[in-house]
Image 1 (cartoon, rainbow, N blue to C red):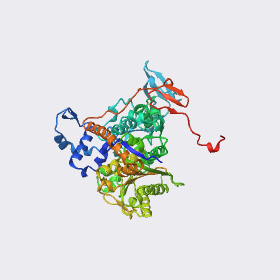
Image 2 (image 1 turned 45 degrees about the vertical axis):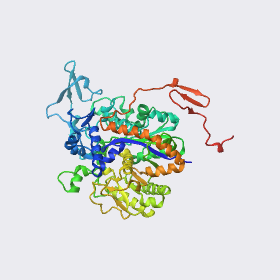
Image 3 (image 1 turned 90 degrees about the vertical axis):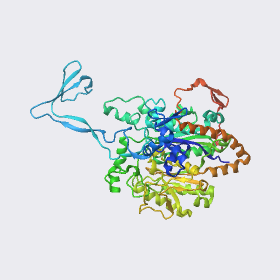
Image 4 (image 1 turned 180 degrees about the horizontal axis):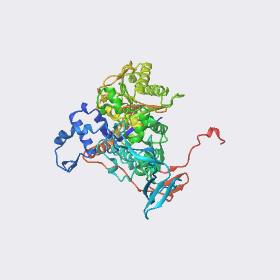
Amino acid sequence: MSNLPVIVGFGGINSAGRASNHYAYRRMVIDKLEQTVADQTLVNLAVLMGLVKIEGSKWLDAQGKVISLDEFLTFNRELILNSTLIRKLENNLFDSSNLLQHSNVVLAPTEGESLSFTIPTRKLPKQIPANWQVSALNDKVSTIEVNGNLEALISDSYSGSVNCAGQLPTGFNPAELYPSRNHPRSLQMTVYGASDALLSMGIDWETVRAHVNPDQIAVYAGSGMSQLDYNGNAGMLQARLLGKRVTSKQLPLGFAEMPADFINAYMLGNIGKTACNLGACATFHYNLNQAIRDIQNGTHRVAVVGNSEAPLVPEIFEGYSAMGALADDAKLKALDKLAEPNHRRACRPFAENVGFTLAESAQFIILFDDTLALELGANIHGSVNDVFVNADGHKKSIASPGIGNYLTVAKAAAATKTVIGEEGLRHKTFVQAHGTGTPQNRVTESAILNDVATHFGIEDWPITAVKSYIGHSIASSGADQLNSSLGVWKYGIIPGILSSEAIAEDVHNKQLDILLQHREIDPESIDAVILNAKGFGGNNATASVLSPKVTHQMLTHKHGEKALSAYQTNNEKVAEASAAYEEQSNSHAISPIYKFNHDVRTGKDLKFEENSIKINGESQNINLQLSNPYSDMCDK
């Protein structure tokens, strides 16, 4: 009997706020929420942004002034809303109007004169050019006379053409919440995002470890583009050109799989499986695929899956701009025929659009097998039915789309039908489209979704795209889709593509209902969601995720009513712990889990036994009595 991968925890951070307890989702649909829920969402964001906190029973604003909550929200509601989601680039990361560059110049002496200058002696090049004459002016300064011309790099600046992004909420800085020690921003976000998922789970990690073998825990996480700010790969590549030195941290912390390494080493103490599967914009789906296979096959019982991407650095904007892929200011102004660009509406999936919008995000989910979920009374947010991955085959251009996404969407739809039936697929599903907001995507993805809907007899298939709110976070984009979709089963609102006023004429939508407004539904009327990813280079992946209701029905069918009744009792304390974490996050900034130099083990902590390895601190041994999977091919 196969094991069902159950979603028992989720969390993270993106431009909409904290993912856990559906806060980021709530920001997207805040205009449709009940007033008390909307206000609580704003308070959670305000605490995150450092605008307000609670001490005892008093609310204090950023200046430490006692203020009533109603008064605070009256004066700060618009500030909070405008400081989230896609918006004009802020200067906390870099100043897009004053970006550093160097100009190559040749300095020539005035006719009849020589070219001379002074320079600190310690700054003299190791290899003195042949046409230089060096004279010591004193013990610290030398004079240079150049015979002929001098090639030089002159510091210059330029203004970026792209000035909007899906940035973390204004004022939130994950580096301030723990000893970040010059960590790249993506790793800072990893520590915060993975902590958010773990703390919201309502089950202490040590309890989880006590119930499973160390070899049955897996962590799949990474960054699709690696760590590209100065504390990571960018600094390693730029330092010498900027007259600085490469540090000992920049290369190791720049590896793409470092988010998983941080989770293992500084958060969980995990000695089980770890990996980072990369697939451009489908990276989260790739990692999710590996995790559910492990759980379905019974080799692993717990998996932490997620990604952290921090691509908001000038060079990445420059690279995507050179491809013509981003919505820059000039294109936005021309699109709207306005004197100033509308940065809030930069990403417009399936509408007349001009490019995608870069975003930063760190999103994580925690999966248990169904038996462990019931045993520990875990919160059940849904389950992962399946994930399909297909390449495009032969291509003319590595960036152009191919046929692979037809296969993944069709197989995800077919897999969904096998669980919830033909009528369920037709009437009780919706799609989180990749929906990048590019002219090419709106045509190709809509054609795929429309053809699949036609094949399966689906009419008016609801389609949405969360990138219209939070931008495109590359590796994390699939997790953005998943974590926001979980909110639909809590609040009954499918976020509409509000940035798009009308569907473009070249979009294929005969069988589709592309939602340009929020769609209010009965949460139990949706049995599954299809999450689609069309990655650069032909990295296509599509996931089928089942609702909490369907998940409970499947668990009851497998384990029986008695087991589910016992589960409900076990879940009471877990739900209380989750609620306590939510309450804390609404009053003050939460310190993330970060255990540097904690419980470090060496070979002295291992003991070899006859068929296992005993490790100090682990409740269960590592099994060495393995079966031979090739027994039918070997001599007995």
